[in-house]
Amino acid sequence: MTQPPFVVGIDLGTSNTALAWTEGTSDDPNALPQVNTLDIAQVVAPGSVEPRATLPSVVYVRGMSEMSEGALNLPWGGDPGFCVGALAREQGAKIPSRMIHSAKSWLCHSGIDRQSRFLPYQSQEEDAKRSPVETATLTLAHLRSAWNHRHPGAENDLAAQDIVLCVPASFDAGARNLTMQAAEAAGLANVTLLEEPQAAFYSWVEQAGAEWRKRMQVGDLVLVIDVGGGTTDFSLIAVADQGGGLELRRIAVGEHILLGGDNMDLALAYGVAARLEQEKGKKLDNYQMSALVQQCRAGKEALLADGKLESFPIALLGRGSSVIGGTIRTELRREGLETLLVDGFFPRCAITDRPARPARSGFREAGLPYAADPAITLHLARFLGQNGPAVAETFPDRVAGSQAIPTAVLFNGGAFKADPLRQRVMQVVGDWCAAAGAEAPRVLEGTSLDLAVARGAAAFGHARRGRGIRIRGGSARTYYIGIQSAAPAVPGMRPPLKAMCVVPHGMEEGTHRDISGREIDLCIWTGEAAEFRFLSSTTRRHDAPGALCDVNDEEFEEHHPIETTLDAKGAESRAVEVDLRSALTEIGTLELSCVERGTANAWQLEFNVRSAASAEAH
Image (tube, rainbow, N blue to C red; front, top):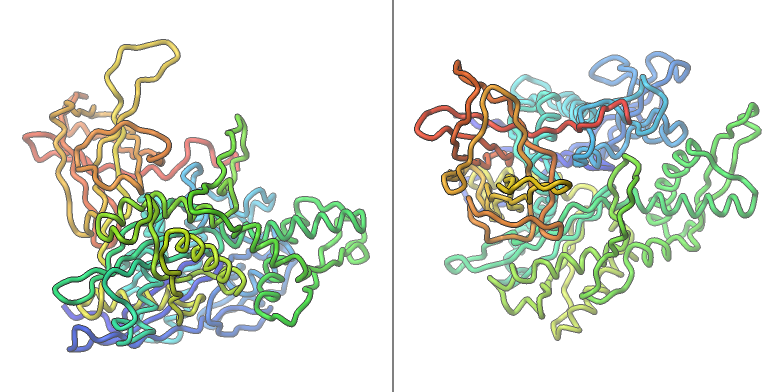
């Protein structure tokens, strides 16, 4: 079959979206691709469209009395009544109740119905509301239109190209499936998923060119730290020997940590609000606080980008009858900003320290499940401690005690545009290495923090065509089906839950596993809906398919259940003895099926991405 002319990499980020591409192939299997980036056309002011290197991942739905008809016109169509990108972010800072941002953070929140329209969260503007999946679809659809406008012709349509779409390494199977749903709804068919930290490393290799092999050596352990707008991701990539050459292996990924630039913006906003109340007696309401958070984000980026700026002006609309006269003016000051971000989010600590785990409350708001401890360095210490045993299997000299000790660090994510944050991380990790008697790690320089993931995704797509280096890794998680233990009924006590492994750690894309249910007499009932509990682990690396394990909160994460309506296939409702089949598809998604023993009957299990709670609660 003729290959599509382009390989396209997409970084669907929490804060910004980017697109990179490469075309053609080389006869040299080791040739590195020529990667290009797309300047994305978007509305930057009412009636004004400009191309920008990135597209802010923000949707703004215009209100009845805002802007004239045609103010949101795009080169490829009329005025849709909403906008994606620069103007959406700017207008949303003024009227946050009509702005949808950080939708990607909601995509991985299994405690809510991610296909229900509840964003902007807690807004009363019902006509502005969209679902997390729909918001991702609107962003990808804008990207497709911008690409097609620059590359006319049916053969060049983005939908016809090989597309690599990036997701956090910590995204579970449900969040990955939802990302694929958004891509399909935007008309993108030939899509493969790639973990963002791997994409960042592919970008470093691509930009280093042929020199990358001289800058890496067998035994190197690269720590990829990705702090974006909504999440913090950690990955370890090892450089091993393969027949005298270099082989890259992704050894470990971290748990899903909802902690990033959004938290930093919120911390800055609380500081400004406290100063306003103390100095001017102004107490902000929820609406004004939402606007303040967005303006603090803009101020943070401006101050960190320009070391000469000492402050950034902030103006908040009043809430009384005299709106103009009641405008509240203040500023975000450089004084204290770096201290808050560096010491608050990247404190110095020992490698044996761990993030705080506060007592659970009986009540909690149904919002995003942010990390309880904002100290990213503490989460990093835990990650290196949890994965020391995995590193020791390959490189025992890269472990001190039970802690993994990296030899190189690759930064990714918009938060690390700030030099003080990168410097603090290297200081902390350097201290850990010194305590272990190891050399301080080096920094892998040369990647664009805004475009690295998109560029790396395009380079990976090129490698999938048999050209260039590949990172081996397979499934970053071990997946399990929950099995209720057979036990006598006891009042007030639920039977203990065991976990049966269905996808082992490292299972390669494009492969499947057959799991016998005979040992536990696994059966299902046909003729009715059934729900299956679903769990995963990033630290249990040696469970084989079919293995039964005791469940604990430390090692296992429970996700939304898997469900299916079990067709009786013309017979009466009955108990059916089954085996399981798991498949990790080529595009990076997980499929699970129940197979009736001795027959060809099979039932595919679908991920239940809807919350049991009504979407109206949001």
